[in-house]
Image (cartoon, rainbow, N blue to C red; front, side, top):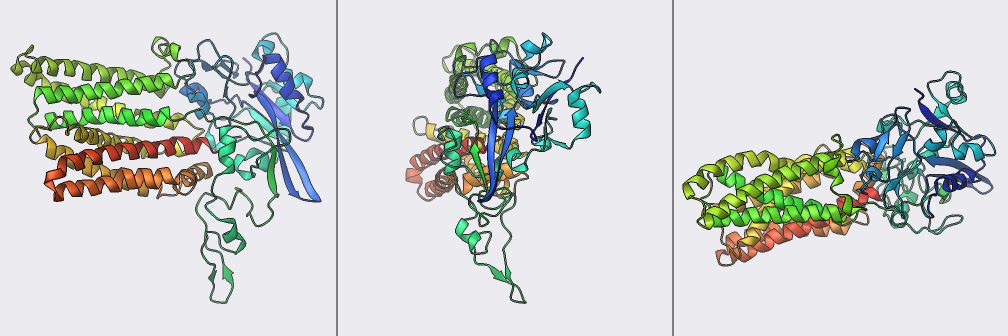
Length: 565
């Protein structure tokens, strides 16, 4: 069985775009999206300048993350190593776009399914070469069997020094480059301007790049300081540069300080990519947190015997759990490019994907919460003897607790599969999501307390749960997620965009001030003024929910604005 791969010889590439044109013609690729394209990067200052080309496409990785995250096996890897897709199966969840560290996948504007380079597999099966290789006038594109010692691609890789893009991702890409400039292979090494050679910058990702705020101001770099403070002086009088922020390079570039030359490294042409996930995803994180958090708070109060809960209030709490879990499901379906095909995730599940696992977890969680709700409603309406219901309560509480925890945290494992977004791959994220669920779940119960008073014992427990979870979440957010330097430059830039860049107001004014500090202040007000405690606590709960949405919006959007190609 062959093991197909590509080799791009940049000693020969002339940047003619014949490969891009042939690919569009052969595969009927719509305008505005590309399966292969040629990136132009210019280096140097006049008259010492040079233009570098990079032919970009799917890497047909030996360990493809897009295949692993796809919930319905619409993206799959053939036995010959080609990573293929089936538009008839795709539900348009866009998870594969988040998993690809190379920006090689797009949503077809006509079919609304994921698409990419598929090695012209229909030609390969007939013994033909891919269209891009056939049309290249310089024979700069070579494809073939990497396991065949007599193939041209195998001999060139063995003889010539080759590179790949982002080998640290562990995807084992099978798109090799000869004589590729490092500035073309590293997306953050170049500056982004308002226009390209033959195009205006029009995509939402590209527009976001233009307005990113540098954590190291250019004026400070020119003054000799790398972090905006005045330069220090050594004992011998020499001026010293203060060490910069870990992982961010200097200025706009991952390589050169901005004071060398504004035009030292710039992208002259590149394909533009859209941001796949927008407000429905942060909204889903909040509603899922509320639903699972209410359930966890109720189950803990009953399981630990902390409150004497009436069947009516228990039924209300469980109804809110079902309501917000239903809203979560609706948001997930709404965000699909093909929402009518959402049942495919249940009829042909791909079990390695946490989208699939999460869907079945939500179903199991909803079933337990639904049965418990029916039992409590039956007691409240006098249809079920209290003795029977009270005996079954602890059983539902303790069986439901693990499902509630998994419903709250499974998104952390889904985000970990999104290998194109380094900031999401945080080992703190499961803990963070669990604490956030307890925070907004208890906050929603406090808001509900305005209409339906909390049972005796439940009120104290919920206030304590809410206050403690606020403090823990504040600690995890400031010192854990954003206080510890990030391991990769991509993650560091995304974190900077949240804390000091275009999303800083969402983070500081929304997530921290509104969602945490104001909520804690309102708790203190409730303690100091019992007469208005109900209103203050309800306002605190709603403030925490609003603040969490603003934080999640920044957390979801910022990593998607860091280019992968």
